[in-house]
Length: 125
Image (cartoon, rainbow, N blue to C red; front, side, top):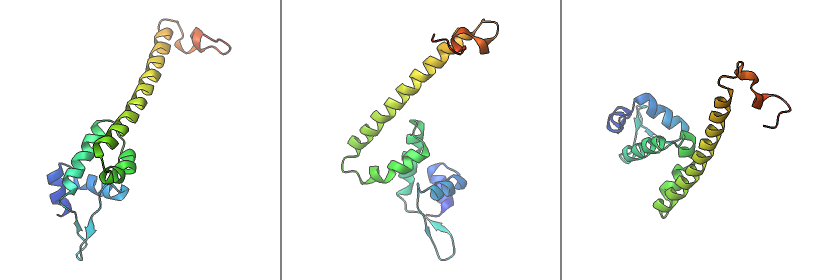
């Protein structure tokens, strides 16, 4: 299918598909007339990409793990491992954000929030 048909079927713009092709997420064959031709199975793959993005995976992660997941003998097990790793990253980020929130909260009402007690050099607290 041509890029316009793929874009309509996948609910994406042709520019997005060109970008995805450039970074290796999808592959189109060039016809003699220069048009791109995509296999029909590209549509469900792009749905997978959209879902993965919604779940917090970057395009780089999807590119990196895409071939591995398509070729995995047990995709559910492979996906579960990726999800577990992503949960660890999310938990770490939540902890970082909690610490940042606590630091910001400690600075509220200090007169000069950039010079709060916890931010002074030499202060261990």
